Image (cartoon, rainbow, N blue to C red; front, side, top):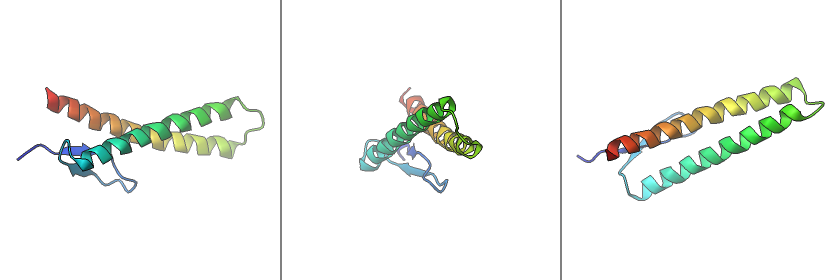
Length: 89
């Protein structure tokens, strides 16, 4: 049986697997790129908030929550990509 490629976690925390090189694998890679794009955007927003005067504690806490969530998602993407690299060797 061929090795299955792990896809990033969906929003519910469920894992998906697909056959490498197929349509679903391409969709998974597009999902990974979106996760990384959102993580970059959240990081930029958080850094922007930190430098603004008059930012509320609530706004900073929300930024921290978003950063924690997107960091976890980005780590999952990194782990998926590492698994693919390991499979290539």
